[in-house]
Length: 403
Image (tube, rainbow, N blue to C red):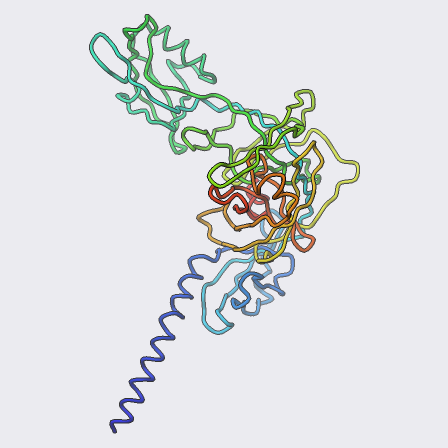
């Protein structure tokens, strides 16, 4: 009897030791795997980076509903750990193959904001002491000023002109915060240092820089680049796009990256070679309409997220002149988390030529296409400051379906 009790005790402990990590794994996969998958042939559905997650059979009736975009049929799929333990139920869309032309060419961005962005605040020293009218009115860094005294503001000069003309009278201000419009009242003050009236803020109305084109979609004459949005350098906020354009760039210098000090591509803007118009600045990149066409575009099928796998790949990027080259990398880790739409892969530069020239990933390479198994799978987005040989990449699917 004692031996039986001991046996069942050992058995229960063993089962418990197996159950805890099993449920932990299921919970982790439930949180990290996306709720939506797309693909050309979902009857062959598999997650290349997690082969132990298998999909149940897709019912023939599940793909019977056409979606409004006419690009896909939708259905439901059950994902199971080792084909046994239920993980989650996901939505699947059967879509046609997307053909895109990978670019890897540098481009110059010139962008003007929709309104002006508050990037800093500083107190005014007045005859009555230190004060900040903007802060007193409830404005914060990151707010976007839209109107002052009923007038649209587009530039720093607009703000200065209207505030100066107020002569200290109250000014109604409409601003945008987190996509919501708000109104407040500003009371400009005159500082002891001069006669001009001020409200104690620093604002920005435009930006410019160098990035890399990820792909062109010649089926509708559009482009995508960067793999992340254009953000203000001081606030980190996504800059609201009013208008912008991209121009040709020739790379003429490289500041090599090293741990703790990101490198940089430097180039010459060709103002007379307008490549396209910016139409959108999003977390997943910049997008717009092309002003040029290739006679023989080199196109590749776009990979869906479940097709991307850890292991060898290549990036297409330009580190001299304006001719892109392929360089070897390794994808060390893949993340399906929807909380970080631009950090889907950890990549590592292994190509000795690129390492010699740049030290790894440097500023200006954001948007460089990532190619694996003859498919466009994503783009470079960020560099690890303490290890420039490594960085993040975004899935091409995330860029394409957010454009």
